[in-house]
Length: 138
Length: 457
Image (tube, rainbow over all chains, first blue to last red; front, top):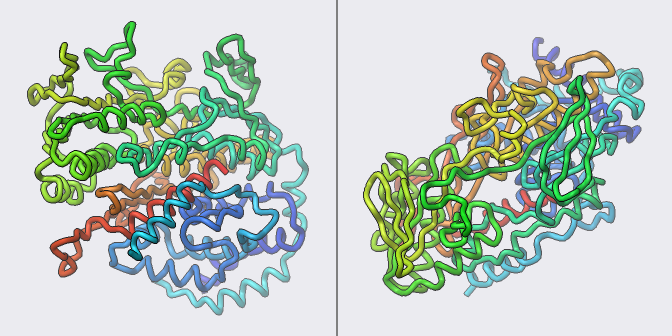
């Protein structure tokens, strides 16, 4: 029962806001009271955000709640020595719910979107990566 | 631990959300006026560029943000060691500011900040640019100037800038190319000497990574030669297993690691040889790469944001506001928040700072303390992740998460989040070390590209 109350609180603090700006598409100023935004921004160094998802690791924006939640919870309890498995342990279960909720409520971005605010990836490094792949095939 | 039933959660979520769409929450926060303010950011590295971008983005363009840097664009220290062994060129890691202007409306000014004056209430600040440059009036000042060096004897500023002879290459740019050129002009059998700076310093694995990259270059291109690593610490400070395995394994004929070697003085001989005089003895080589002890960027000290005798600025961990002067924030390598100094971490801190400034501004009109909202405090996180090239095409990784601790108002390492690539029992193959891999080398570029985008585009 207790967790229902917690969830209700969570829904009111994050889910509802997401729903509001999805349906009304309004001012980001209301995010001031949503702590999930700043927390979720910590994923962007590697995963990209704001339309930059054509680079980096897995996309998060617009991914299903279940997928994000399940993966992070698996990593949280995993003893594998992998980078993301260490990262996941920085968050509580409640925070993982908030993150999954936040990302699943964001518009999915893709590189063909004309409103994509990202500029070209660093071309030289991209090119270099292709060469690297070729080397490996040799 | 309670097992959350997600189906239940989604059901509850949908039902209650449908019931509860009350526009009153919106009204309370609506109206452009609440976020009107001007912020000047001093320094356009990973910390400065991120805070400028996120202040604009999260305020929906309501906060006016001016970012000042002495350079027209930023040369990334991240990946810069790969210039030394010709894996990358400077242009690959040069990041223009134009996307910040075009995509987010950040006002970018090139110039050197000579000082900041404040009105009698310390409410309005004026940032002065040198050389007859303009003055920028603002309500908040964010300092992200990176590092300065504490010069050692023999490297003091004089008629000749000794860094032109003994490069640090620790602020990327022409210095990086200079060190590369010196390395490339070495003959087979020559010695490359480098010093590790005293902790805390920018990029904890960086010096050891550099030793590996230089050793790889000497091994592949010059055949024979030496890399002498002079470390003021009594042991390798980070990723010890990885770097000692590299130094004592694949680079055992090249790398000589000297602990407890504090650099005292530098001498240039008539024949051009460089001598590093240290507490562990004198070392002579063709190339000397001194990475001096760091301190906060000069402007931080000039503005009185350093405590006596301290190298880095004390800040409130919930906002990065200086503990010595309100309205001034210090992010990235210049603060003493106890978190690693790196581009990735600078980006992480900048987001917490941007969030805090927006909450401060919003709080002014509503008389609420949004900054110290308990839910916010408990969700303040930063993280660190990086990859270090160890060979020509292999890298290791390192990561950690930090969380805000209310008890002492500080950022603390979260247990079990600190990790690095490690030997997995049973997986060791004689020709290959599980401490580094080619997959990680590729991931390194994914990571860097993503970090560059998230910060500068």
